Image (cartoon, rainbow, N blue to C red; front, side, top):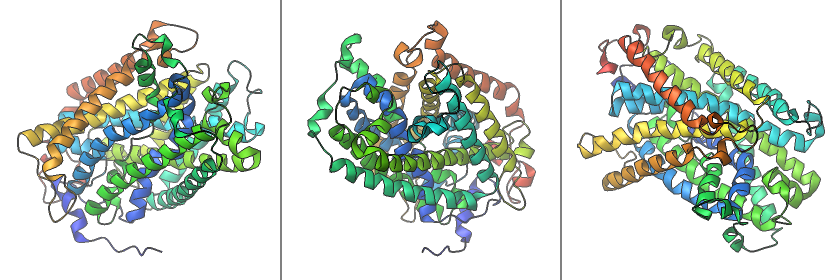
Length: 513
């Protein structure tokens, strides 16, 4: 068992650069920060939630989107690891963008990330519907699953239960969250390894299966490339959220060293284990032609390969993974809201930035975020295609928020203003410029790919309307444009570290320079 050491005075050094006084309790060790990052990525949640979409859109060859997305996101993760070594503060993306860019860009990046996180809570919670009814019909509370709105309505009920759970746990403080999260991650990692082994012993075909396209490119002008770019959404959904390890920096011990390691380890572990699950699933399923591969996805493969008893046991582990993933996303969203409110950058900031005296956690933003995530679920009741739409919109806004960090970081490098952490802490050294350029190019390219108004993603089933197909462009545009208009005309005149959160030696406007 790891012994938790008391926080060191130096743990708060970087916090002082922002003009903040320490408020959140430092209790998280090395594994806790790693667990936070990997539970947000969540190998079993992401791979099981959108395998059906990736396979249905691109066939077995969609597997190649996994290493493609990893390569691009790994560039982003390396940039974030360097930032985490320098600035391990709550609301990582918001504060990084503000520090290396300016307070206006920081607000927009934080706003996009906050909305995306709330949307992501809803999207992750909807994954309960993909697993629980396959474990037992008892969990299909609405109809028998064959009615027009049975599945969509039932998904809202199950998701609402999960969101209520994550709200209560986060309201009771970071220690309870960390214990549940760590236990969940431990179970998820063991289950992932067991699943890989079980798939491996049931192999029926060779790895060349990943070269088969199932003729999915026939309906695209660009051939299979068009189908592959659509299918890549399934992989893009998994590998993000690694910055959560840094966002818990004010509650971690030795965060300048632990957070960068946690970021890198989380994304690498997710790539290796997730890639093996996807590959071995394709190699072991009894048939590649079954319709359920494009409807029930990996859940179907698990039951097909392992049988009912072992398969359902594994699906319970998937359920645990979904639970801790939703918990981690909720936790990260709360820290981001707290960080923005501490700078008086949200309505009612003084109340949102207040920590509960007993639980030492921001309770009000925890509850509000939970309510907002629940409200998003309502649109799912009579819009079954919302699964993919909600997921895609959430990913787009997170990619945009990440660009709000990597772009100003690149500008700072080119202008010679970026100074990485010293004292042997993580640094990209001479590779920094190349990695940063690749991170920006990747972010721009994937954002365009994700937001492109394809009917196959945003309006795949009736009713067919132009505003459904252009839904992502419209929604993201309204959130970004409307949000920044509010900030520019109202909120920016109030920004500045609230007095009750300001370090005594800091100037009142130190954060807004």
